[in-house]
Image (cartoon, rainbow, N blue to C red):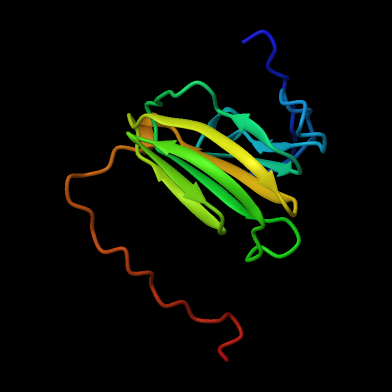
Length: 157
């Protein structure tokens, strides 16, 4: 798209990029955004993530669309992640979900979604958009255990 801003993060080390701020295409998002560009910056990385500070009502992601990759949207409080003081509607498939709590939304590849309608913002919140490239998001019909492994502290405590 011609009106999309160019994001230019700075490579600092083999697997470290300094996030450079950029201006959102949405006039209501006035604070700088940051986005990790995943495979376009680090070839082995399949994850891309963008972060925005939301302070007022708006409609994001319009019109309803689909992607050929999995996507996650996080809505969390800006000062305290657990405090979410906003009213949001999100279209996922054929449902419109009412959200007034901190959450994340999993959008499987090929699923119709959006718009994200931010109706009221009592306190600013953080919007996170995360996706995995199509090549990395091929999920098997049966998924192995999602139980997380037990980690041992490095200091052996």
